Length: 632
Image (cartoon, rainbow, N blue to C red; front, side, top):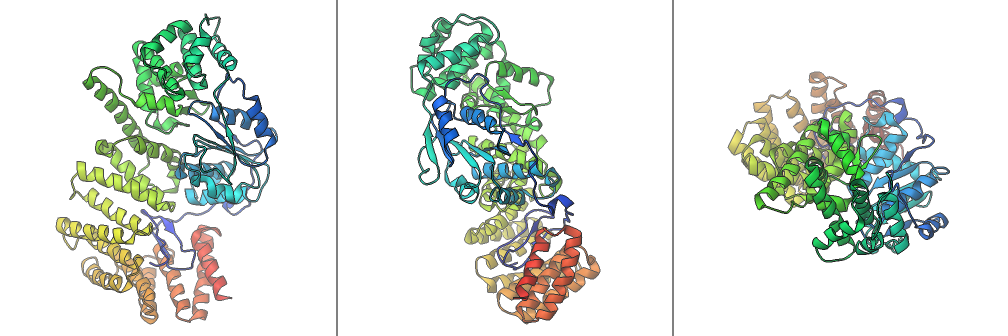
């Protein structure tokens, strides 16, 4: 393989944009007509969380959003109402903007998933056809060529995660960003600092929430709101509890006084949460247990497939929503403010053994939820939409947990998540997830378990794809040693590991060493597996690519032609590995100056690829571009 392009996972697809070497597994995806048609955004496409039913103030900030034509970055403390303001304003824009699309943007993975979700919402037929990377690109292309849309990028941690998106598409529609940080936005957007509520507005919010279901004693609301720093989230949580339980503000204030000093504004939210959380634990421990469980996921849109299938769960969620601890959505998903989650993840006060048990129970339930929800065949297009939904929650879980405590149920999920990330070209992120899965396998299954060895090989390939060649060589060599010692030199896993080691050397710019390694393993594959085995023929094709990198074009063409001819007979002319080998062979002809032969082969392959995969499939595009280069 050359060009640094590699498919990841069983039956996955990758193609080199430089008309280099193409490599694949064995999956064929036939594209529906929608994939070939222009993208048309359906009218009224709105994806905005329904936040802040009791909204007060913010008139001046709303006027700024109305009057600004460039990107606006709403900054402020956690719990100050940045997302609530953005959501309220965005919903009003739906009258004259389309689409109005909300993206959770805490990381680059979140941003990519949100853009892919937009493309899928525009063309639902493509949900199980294109991987996330292709859908993301489709959305970006549409945004950069259309006007009248609105994106909300919520909770951006690093401006660098959205800078590329804004540079490419920000000039056509409107973008509103929410972020806790004011740093790094120079030249990107106008910063709108959101203060806490004015005293009268805080009291108004408290009164509206507390008296929502009927009259309540609000004496002392002014003092309570002041103690809570007039932070909207803290005020709303306290008011919801007071209204739900008919607790007077002064009684709640006394409980706050027993929970610690005043602290800063965000600590006020935590203190209000602890008071409500502790009281709710005494009356409805099941509800608070569910809240602890929800604390391990990403805050927005925790999907139904992650929720425990127990009858009492919906009742518990309703109780939590009544106390403003969670937000329930029409599709059954649940959102929880990140500060609420932070408090929920803390072990409860009391006996150390009880504390550990409560934390372990919630985390274990989260791991079980992932194990039940995550499809392990991440390369199957039928599962791509599920992975797009799950990935932000997997990432959040990993961010909040100690790798040394990962349970066995989580390991297969992490391995599949790494494969999905690699499939979408996110090699650094894939390497991180695969590395964590590997650490868990070594700890729980042992370093010589076949699953552990397979993961080590997958990590080595991912490192190579990420451009970390030295690490990839070291990792691949270790896999070769381990598989050979544990399974024997002739085991197929050991042979594959040796091919991986050759690839790592090629990507490290060491083609001579790669050739020696690949020649050696090819001899052993022919002896052990047979000259007509798929693995042997693929290794033969890979060696042709290495020869081409060494400018040994005549030998490369001879070997590539041999592999293609054998595959056509043994596997069939339309087997995907056969087609890829033929595409690579045409490239070898072109490199060797046999342009007429290359053109004839590409023209034949273009017809086959368009029929099997569609005009916009990476293989079809690859062959089309190769033909265009020959005609220059």
